[in-house]
Length: 340
Image 1 (tube, rainbow, N blue to C red):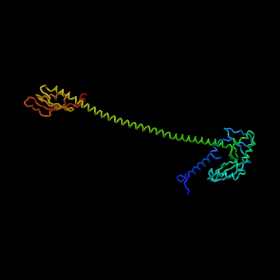
Image 2 (image 1 turned 90 degrees about the vertical axis):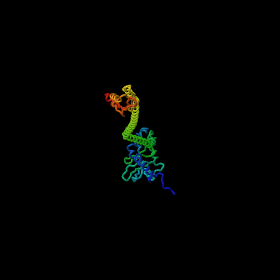
Image 3 (image 1 turned 90 degrees about the horizontal axis):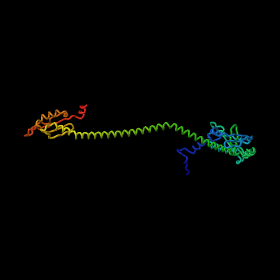
Image 4 (image 1 turned 60 degrees about the vertical axis):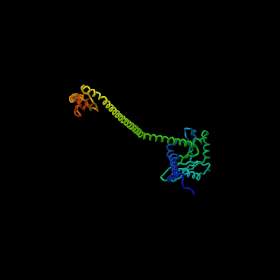
């Protein structure tokens, strides 16, 4: 069983038809004789009558053509539906030439042109001639122009419309015209690309600026995290330093207090115990008169307060009194304030 599936079908659309339609529209717009592209973009051609002999031999930078007298051309007018594609028109024209040409097939040369396109009808003119007759016309030219069939195009004229007879020097012009189309398409592509780039440039610039700002933001966040970490480390170091200072003060300050008490207590008495915690000192000792000693210690400016923590009592059969006192030293901040 023959499969009805085509390799050119996509979602039910025949891509070959789309491609054919695209190529047909391209030919009708830019390639066919009489098309918009031919009228506006084709290279200029100097046209001379076969009856005159003032034409110059064609050169690389000069395109020339011979114009046939109507006596050597058979014209046929075709009126085709506008829906007929250019490829179909070529087939119709070829069939019309095979039917209408009075010359043998190997001797027939022709050209055709769309001269009018209406809403529903396309008017096509076909020009038919004999290669043998054209060779005779070339042979009748002056000797300097006889070998021009490979340098000159051959044109026919119907109601002011020029029709190119194919098979002569029109290939050269077609090549140059194709090259011009390619260069024009490349120029348009470059221009469109430049326009797109020009339109996209502000967007790209803003994107780069946004990316730069995002990088700055990320860097600022990283710096902030580092600053917070450093500040935390600094606070920890300060706490450690404060703890060391406190320990140092606690280890050093008792020496001063102990020396002051040693100096203030009479030689007849002595200390039994000494304990200092911050600015609080607790002592126990023996003195001949504990009350007098407490009064003397209260008179020392460096002692903020002196008070007993237990009752004064005699020590057995000795004449000494046992005392227990609490001495408060000024706080460090208070000392600074008093100094100021």
